[in-house]
Image 1: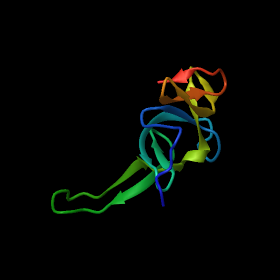
Image 2 (image 1 turned 90 degrees about the vertical axis):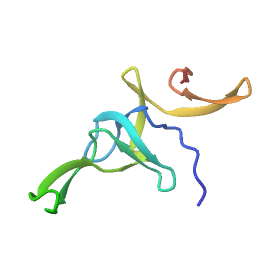
Image 3 (image 1 turned 180 degrees about the horizontal axis):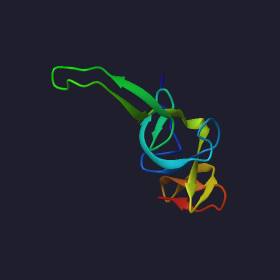
Length: 105
């Protein structure tokens, strides 16, 4: 499978538009281009059980973020969600907000 060109990048602020965490927003921490899934800060929290080991004699239960499909989020710019397009300007491909045509850095 080829790596897809995605319109959302690491560090972008996104809002979840569908699913259990609808309405939550956060920063993109990690992107898996092959499975088209992203890790968003504070979204899709799951419970992970950690067994005791030689270093840690106590077991524990951690709450960690899990990945969410990229189609379930929308880019947020100045508090508004927007679709993202790509166009060529001065020989470079740039991302732009479809809501107002503004270039996204």
